[in-house]
Amino acid sequence: MKTVTRVFALVPDCHTTSRYRHVWRRQFYEGLEGVLPSVVLPQKVDFEWARPPQSRSPGRSLERDQMSERLWQQIKHAHAQRGLDAIISCCFSADIDPGLIVRTVEMGVPWINFFCDSVYAFDYVEALAKVTSLNWFPEHAAIPSYRATGRPMLCRPYALNPAALPPALCDIAEHAVGFVGAPTSNRVILLAALRALGSRVAIRGHGWQPSQLGSAPEPPPAAKPDVRVRGSRRERMLIRLLKPLVRRGSRPLSESEMTAFLSHCRVVLGLNQGRGLEGKYQSYLKLRDVEFPGYGCCYLTQHNQDVAAALEPGREVLTFRHIPEAASLIRWSTRNAREARAIGEAGRKRVLSEHTWASRIQELAGAL
Image (tube, rainbow, N blue to C red; front, side):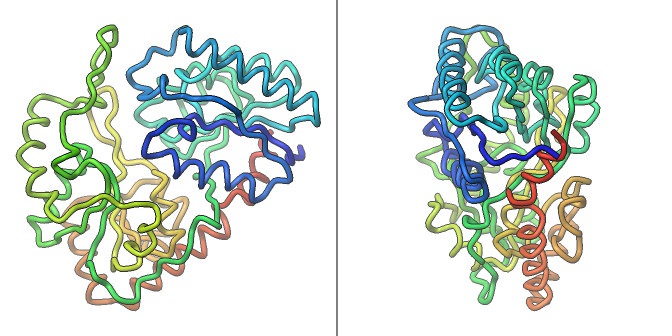
């Protein structure tokens, strides 16, 4: 089995001002640094030009060419100095030229690219998937798409950084159910439905408050509007009606407040659907589906085969297939606090034993 001890890591979101920057840096960069003797990070790079990825064509661009050349020089220098066992990235095709991967592999350094939205946005990464040494992704439903590229693949969940998962077991529940996330269309609708069934959710996250409202950024003139981002006109009208009702009591949540909020929720809710090009929503594994159980929360999320493969439903996580079932499980957790806490404890134990970088690096090395 190949030994992986020194890698070059590349996560463009860590080099932006997006709300995901700190999450990816904490879980990806710091997670790798916690288990490997040597991790090389890109220097003096800024990927603001590449965000949001859905607004950009994966074709050639001056910014992408310049960034790819800058990264090539850094990778080549790191390999010449002490050698590199692999590149581990989390990139979109709009971030880097596939030729950068080809040159790196020809130099003798395998390239692993992780992508976590393959169910609804495989086209965002397809150009890279065709040339990488190993495609790593968490969604079983995406296996046919990756298999069609003819490249090696590993379908496994996210790798987490244990140092970024302090225990957040619930002793005293200030909230029966809490949710952390942005106000995407399906989330607003599902949260409104839960409220109608008597489950008022404590909401935390950016974008819910009136001062942060507004329509989603319009794609640039040259780009075709993407239904995955914009949705239908009817749906947008419904969201405008429901959001004022759903957002009552919501507020932003800083990273330093995360553990305290989670520990004061009897149940933490996950809404993990994404909308594909055909406009339909599909449930798939999100980072929160592994991260929140890792904190020790009693986590309730939408059911899919990826969640069921990562955690045991009913013992390490709670899952639901429709909103009435979710409301019923929330009521059950309120009546059975001890059992709900035990689910959180079991989920945390599973995550820390199986879904950390220490475990995933071995699997990646074996796959290479």
